Image 1: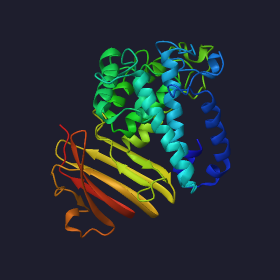
Image 2: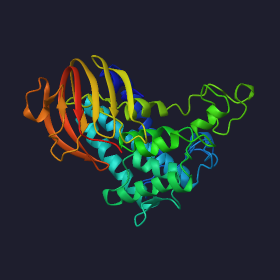
Image 3: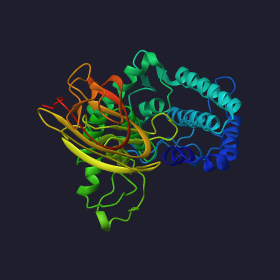
Amino acid sequence: MPWELYKAYGDTELLEAMYPTIVKQLEFYTASTNASNGLLYPWTASQWDFLGDWITPHGSETKVTSPENLLFNNCYLRYITVLTSKIASTLGKDSDAKEYAAAADALAIAINRAFLNASSGVYLTKPMQTWQVMPLAAGVVPDAAMDLAYTALEQSINVIQAGHLDTGLTGTYFMTKLLTESNRNDLLFTMANQTTFPSYGYFLEQGYTTWPEDWNAKGGASSSVSKMHGCYNAIGLWFLQGIAGISVDASDPSYPITIRAGITSGDIREASGARFALHGPASSSWSVTTSSFTHNLTIPANSIAKVMVPTASKKGTDVLEAGKPVLSRSVTGVKVIGVETLQGINYLVMSVGSGSYYFTSQWAKP
């Protein structure tokens, strides 16, 4: 939470205040780490001290010594150790940053040695969603197995679960975050459009307008389950960052704002949204037809953003701003960085200063 607040607001005060507690927490985990294999183990027999994913459609992972709980908690430890390294670096504690980075790398090696099938990219015995998501989200998966690991996750979503999710209170957040940040809007779109159990649409079919505690919650207002249990609201991150396409990250001083339209989100052809960045609101409104793409956006004052516009050209020659070719370098406030390919789509990448812009291109969607 301190790191996410820093990314959103650029204020290091909370990082400073929380750093001693963060260090103590990692020291506590170190005391329960096995020196022979480098893995964290439960320090009590209580399920609440070493849960895996909780209230998943296939059931909760409560046995503290089970492989799935060991995988989940070691991946989470790796995740927060990496964040601690980043926090230390942000606070100018370079020695600590190097120490935690090295610890995170060692833990990743230990996790892969214990749980990864390198030939299939599958963690543990089969491609369950949380089991695949946590190593990917924690940055554990080695480069050589990355494509295989994503393929296994995709198989779990599209084939094994027939387009439905199979994650719980903790796994759902990490899956949404992972797929949004890795530009897999297609997979999130598939899951978000289901109306049968387990899905967000299933909640709506049961009459819910808030977040119940359990995917299997029935009866809407008449049900006895918790009805305001903010477990699965991570999907909101995808709407804003994945579909509208606005990311804010103060930890990136070069481009604290990134805007890339969510054109890979299934059959969505237009979207708009806004969010506060460090110096004011950033907005994005885009649409795509069978012949062209348009994108209106606003960058707040005293800000700079990385803007990515899909292009039908390998060089971005079709990208215009208010009718002017961007590559002509005649557009005030816009500097071309280059072309980047994501999910088979070419994007013209630009550095864009404060102001309102109207980008168009010949990129089209059938």
